[in-house]
Image (cartoon, rainbow, N blue to C red; front, side):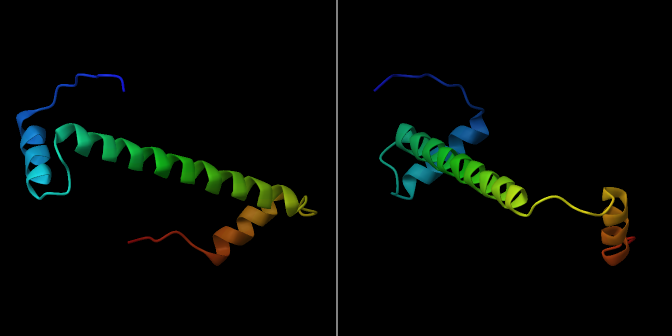
Length: 83
């Protein structure tokens, strides 16, 4: 394992100490590693979702309509929330 040193504000240090005190983490490093793993998993999940959306778009084929007409239709069907 590689060592890394980070600086955090006193408020963040207190937050980390409180999370460790709850007993889910052995120490601050364990807590930070967990946060990093979860962030990595979320990022990978987002990339998979985006790839699936791109694949779905490719599979749907090309529009026979003018894109401006399609956007106009969507905007008419789903008007912006005006307060």
